[in-house]
Length: 402
Image 1 (cartoon, rainbow, N blue to C red):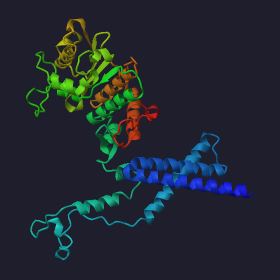
Image 2 (image 1 turned 45 degrees about the vertical axis):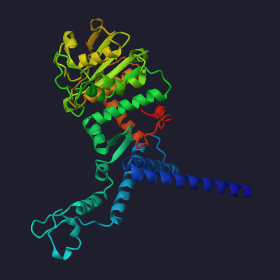
Image 3 (image 1 turned 180 degrees about the vertical axis):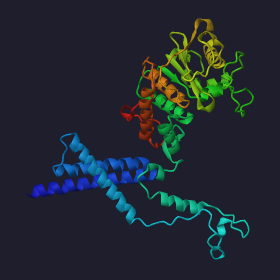
Image 4 (image 1 turned 60 degrees about the vertical axis):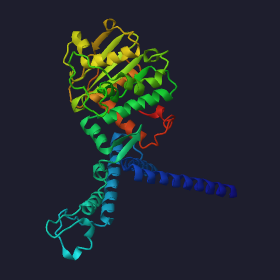
């Protein structure tokens, strides 16, 4: 009997310690990532209700009972939220244009109010308005600030508004696109895989066509893509930043000796993008142009300014061993049901991932993109806020959706 009591006390103490640790984790998420905290809270609340229903003998045995149980959960949550709102002190909404009161001059002396033009700072009133909004926990948009950082790594930050654009508008912007490229690059390096694809970000091409001796000039020649005249490319600086780390200074090896594929995404106007994939072994330069931005026929692709600039860079990398006559420039056909001007980045991220996992299927439609978009969204959420340290994700890659 004594042993049983001692064992129960030990188990209770162990449970209390684990629960305290759980509380610390939830408090941290509440402060650092409210959206994830809200998701976790709802998940644990569902588990709690399921355990209660199970103890009451209400475990569902068919779809109808499952629906009834879900209705009870929903009703329980609604009642809890109503009680929370009733118990919360009411915050009187203050207008952003209050009338000036001489009796309150001491309160507003730091707000630059003068007697003539009613000039004032709005920070105090805006903060009170935000407090009122934060009382409603039904909608995540009400209490998440749009500039709040949800995901942070590779010296890049992804905010709430960017995730909203991805989720609601199917819009993967350049920042998110490059974040995903850097993620694949880190994953390829950490899983002890043989590096088979050189993953370049959109900044590669921008650096490549930056005019020499005008380092501060951001007027990149990336919009006028159908010109046939070759401009001088910024080879030395681009090599130093993007390929030197892989091949070294002695030129004994080139990127073509190390990688099977080279991925070069190019951002155009309105955040449109095209993707160029170089297949080293087959001597093919593949163009993925979802929205037909490059207005050239298949036979004229070797006249495209963008493709020529990229090919010229790797000619210099290979010490002019590449003969353009031996290479095929191919526009890859992709099949999908409906075009959308914001989808090109998501398509190109998908194509890059296909090469990364060494799949050769590129015939896709909107259903593929919807699933892939959801996986990218989940990936950003699960990476969350990191310390940007090397190897920090090493034991997590296998559990990520991509």
